[in-house]
Amino acid sequence: MLPRPRRPARRLVTTAVAVALTVATVTACASDPAATSAPATGVVSTDFGGTDIAWVQLMIPMDQQLLPVLDLVSQRSADPALTRLAGELRTRYTTEIQELKALRAKAGLDDSNPHAGHRMPGLVDADTLAAIGATGGAAEFDRKVTACLREHLDQLANLARSELANGTSASVKVLARQVAESRSAGLATLPAAAPTTSAAAGG
Image (cartoon, rainbow, N blue to C red; front, top):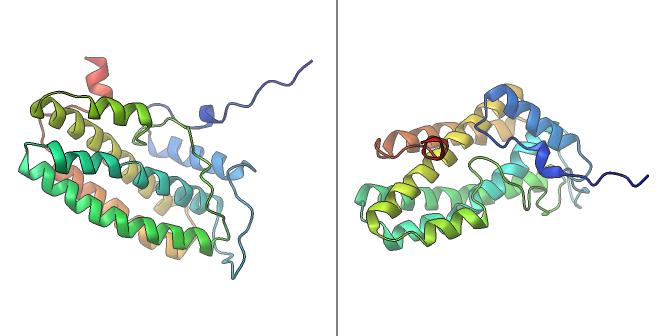
């Protein structure tokens, strides 16, 4: 009998995360041999637990894959507040990605992305980016981008709080605290009228 094919995407949460489910998800990813890369050369820190490693490996693509959306906002948005927020996020993410990569190296991981091709809340995939880019009209564009940003920022705030509650690495938790605070602040500045992606789909 042939073995059943692996379906790594099913290990990820595909609906809005509760904190407890987030913890289970990142821990499962960390325990998967495919998710923990081979150690890189150089000095390796030993204070990284499974949650720390999974959080760092997930945060990098979460940040990187939002950058094209932020660039579209600067080019097409009619909302000055949304444009300003996108610029602030882009500056923060550019710096944060480098900090995450430094933590990844400190943990002894290579630069592979164990989440390539996965779908989960807040992770902007190619289909989402294409749909936003194809939106006609500034008002509809701003509505879609706002919904996308709200889901993204909310998810990252949840993930950061899970890392703070369950991680073991002091250096990772310092960054996670910054992420939790900055994403919560970003959520507070988003226009209140735009629904979340899940709410829009349900309505």
